[in-house]
Amino acid sequence: MSLHSQDNSTKKPPLINVRHLSYAVGHQTVLEDLSFTIQEGDYVGLLGPNGSGKTTLLRLLLGLLSPDSGSIEILGQSPKQGAHKQAIGYVPQRASRTDWGFPATAAEVVRSGRTPLKKWWQLLNADDHEAIQRAMDIVGVNAFADTPISELSGGQRQRVFIARALAAEPRLLILDEPTTGVDIAVQHDFYAFLKKLNTEFGMTIVLVSHDIDAITHETSSVLCINQTLVCHLPTEEFLDSSHLTEMFGHHATHVYHDHSSEHAKQTLL
Amino acid sequence: MNELLSLFTYDFMQRAFVVGLVIGVIAPLIGLYVVTRGYSLMADTLSHVALAGIAIGTLFGAAPIPFAIAATVIAAIGIERLGSRAHIFGESILAIFLSGSLALAIVLMSVQSGFSGDLLSYLFGSITTVTTSDVQIISVLGGVIVVGVLVLYRQLFLVSFDPDIAQSQGMRAQRYELALLIMTAVTVAMAMRIVGVLLIGALMVMPTLSGMLLGKSFVRSHVIAVVCSLLSVIFGIAISYIAETATGGTIVLCALTLFILSVIWRR
Image (tube, rainbow over the protein chains, first blue to last red):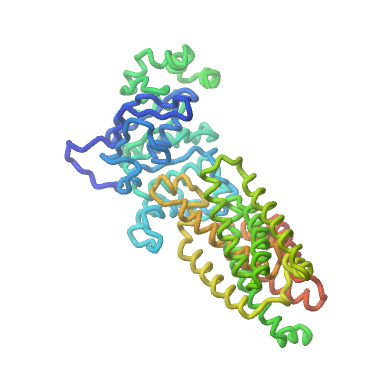
């Protein structure tokens, strides 16, 4: 089972190509001269302290904001251009404005992932239903498909939102702080699932988190920003570099060297 | 029972029933989006704008409903534009429209002699004054709204549930929001005939809340809300006819009763 037919040509443009990106709110610089690329199949951890511009960067990538200067290309096109808008599947932070009192079942939410692909007069066809079912199968939401989202656990709801993103058959999945408020035990399963999505299904993943422990354990490269690019390194090199300490202080290295210490992680965060 | 059936021998009651049933379907249909988007105050505001529209219409000696519809649609578009452009804090823009149009309505009515009686009928609804042309306008526009909600159902769902996702995935979220606002405006202007300015919000919100409590899915919430609303309208008109009570208030009390029963049922 594959989400996309694999294209073996090697000269493809990077999935995401950000060049000299700057963005300010009023006189407050949020992002400055940020450049990086993400290749198809990457599993990238986006790391940065609070106020580093992570959320703004996501909104820029999603085309919800426009850069003041510099450029963003997704498969060679601007996020504002139509064709590749659906290339990014976005899983918002659970605490975002979506209201859990909203009367919708898990299946209704997953199905809505297909809506932006259709014109308003078009009905869902067999292909759409197949993509929706495949997304539900991969993520494993069939068991609670008809349950209202307000009655789901945090982890289950997170899966529903991933299934919704996958239903649109994106090239890239961006997850914004996905494990906030999810049980530790469930988090393990969740990260295992993401890894499987990346390795078995070839899904490119950007994991946004301030959970350094998770990022350094799960991802294959780390994109570290703090208004501008701090570093973009394979995860092992990142761990050996001084960037971790620079950004998060000496506790951070402590966490890395002592994985079992949940306490250290708590004090860090 | 015979007394109840005699209700249909009067032309004005037949007209009231037709208009009541149309409003009974579209008010909760739009109401689900009004509630989930947090537009309750918007509905109240537009109802006061509708009153100003009627006052203007009466000044020109024209039929009130078309003027009410025009006023609410223009105001809805104005609120949407101002809300996204002018930096007016949150809901205060709605307060400006609400108070402003109420003031305008009162002033315009005060200069027209003999209008104060009508004022009451618009504030609290009056089924005896429904004209044949009201029935025609409300049936046609009601039909358009029902079709509109059915056709745009998936888009309206996503725009209400997660506007950011809709926008980022290339949907023109603002267009659907505008369509929703215009449908809300038209519904409010038409519902005023039956339940009056002061109780429109209740007719849109109460059956919707019952639907959300019992429905669990979005589709079932829609269906249950419409059923509750229709029951409220039918029983409300019948009870008000027999007990000689104010129709709008009776309808809303029926809706409130159904809501309370939904809360108890849910437990």
